[in-house]
Amino acid sequence: MLHILYVIAIIAEAMTASFSAGRRDMDYVGVMIIAWVTALGGGTIRNVMLGHYPMTWIEHPSYLIITALAAILTTFFAQHVARQKKLFLLLDAIGLVVFTILGCQLAMDMHMSSIIVIFSGMITGCAGGIMRDVLCNDIPLIFRKEIYASISLLTGFLYVVIFNFMGDAYHIATLVAFFVGLGIRLLAIRYDWSIPKFVYRDDKEQKE
Amino acid sequence: MLHILYVIAIIAEAMTASFSAGRRDMDYVGVMIIAWVTALGGGTIRNVMLGHYPMTWIEHPSYLIITALAAILTTFFAQHVARQKKLFLLLDAIGLVVFTILGCQLAMDMHMSSIIVIFSGMITGCAGGIMRDVLCNDIPLIFRKEIYASISLLTGFLYVVIFNFMGDAYHIATLVAFFVGLGIRLLAIRYDWSIPKFVYRDDKEQKE
Amino acid sequence: MLHILYVIAIIAEAMTASFSAGRRDMDYVGVMIIAWVTALGGGTIRNVMLGHYPMTWIEHPSYLIITALAAILTTFFAQHVARQKKLFLLLDAIGLVVFTILGCQLAMDMHMSSIIVIFSGMITGCAGGIMRDVLCNDIPLIFRKEIYASISLLTGFLYVVIFNFMGDAYHIATLVAFFVGLGIRLLAIRYDWSIPKFVYRDDKEQKE
Image (cartoon, rainbow over all chains, first blue to last red; front, side, top):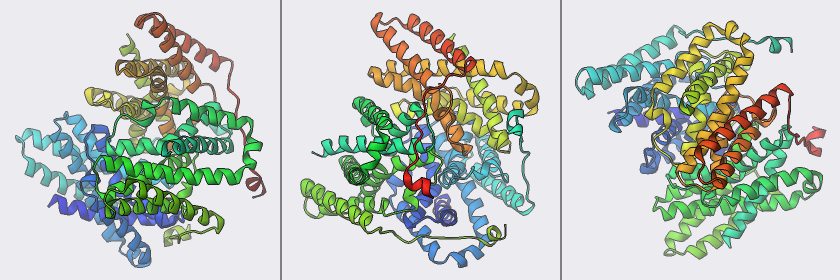
């Protein structure tokens, strides 16, 4: 079940990545690389951090093909796809929560401490989007807008707490983390929630 | 033979990296770091992805010295070196193809699937240039101009197909992939070939 | 002793990272991530390069908490903290030297060659700041201003030379590298030392 959602999520991420690349006038190779980085980059960074080999996409090279195809096809139906904005926000929200839970599970399987389990979920959920924005020469969106990474933190936190306090309750932890995380993400989009910003200008900079 | 071409290629990459750093007014340490990232970064990222240790430059620390020296020396003869533009385009093209083939070989030695072998070649050929552009705060050139990454894909594809279909024909695969890849790259430079771009502006952005 | 200085240094790095994030109007999650990357990123990149697992912060997850707290608290006392500029320059200089020495020690414990030991120190000292600047969409500061990475190189060089020529003189090497590196860094700040820049404009670019 989580696996099917994962495949749907990487396809959705690849499709949205395609638009990021299009806004920067990239060619088809650029589109493909941005799609890979966005869809598979978070899990890759997590695996590198945890020292977990092989990478997911080395075990399943078909993920590379699926995401590349999804991104390229999106360029042909861009106007049509762009109209499905709500569907993509939903798929992206599902992706964030599913990536996070899978990241937590992997760290847990490696017997990491609770803090690292939550952290692993957050890397999996967020690092792909951060790298996409760095490659497109933007300041990463999740540092500035909407409660995106916070949802990842919360989902991971719920997962760990329920798992530990209810005696290895794998299924319940997954279900609760999934639905609460997804629910709050959708509410955050609907009501435009955000967390406070830290705006700082030092004197020297102001004078310039 | 491939090894000699590899050393020539990393020197050429370090020298061109020097110009990228100079366009951004970097100091000599910046020049050196950009040279390392450009010349050795692709292979490093590939090794991290595949979990192949130690890194090439840890086995051969002299590569760090050679590339640093090449980049620093270039700054002293910048005007002279810049005039050899055609030579550098040739060396860069050789570098792309040699890096790609070496990346394919490594993945093949690790018994990776064909898709990963091609992908490994592409990372080796392209990731160094991508990281150089990110550190110089540019949108990576290979996402936008010329068929660069595509040549890497094609070279890797030829290598894998010939290797598999001709019964582990290591030498033939290397030779064909090298000359076809290099030839098309040089033709692409000569006739300014490019692949289609995906240009996308969403309504909201247009209004802004 | 070095360990205590290390903890002080990651706290100081996290606090200065907080200002970088504030200059880009990041929210609290952005502040936290920039703090982690700045304080712990250098050691992480070094571990990945050397293939040394687990990461420092996986062994000591408390470092993640300490640096996140330091960065968040800084946002509440920003004006007050900003006034302590000299203290932070001192702490940052200590951090640079301590990170470098710890990076050298790790590579030495792994029996790396002298060049790699120095290189490992430099990655540990500088990569965190480079990644902070990339995520904030700046050209890395250390490529352009002040002798920062050069101090790291010098500190590592002193450490390796003394260690090797005085017969595994671990304590003397650490002490000399620490005080000479720190001293020169402070002099560099005081007298605004810098190393030459390489400024290059090619004809095509000038015409544009």
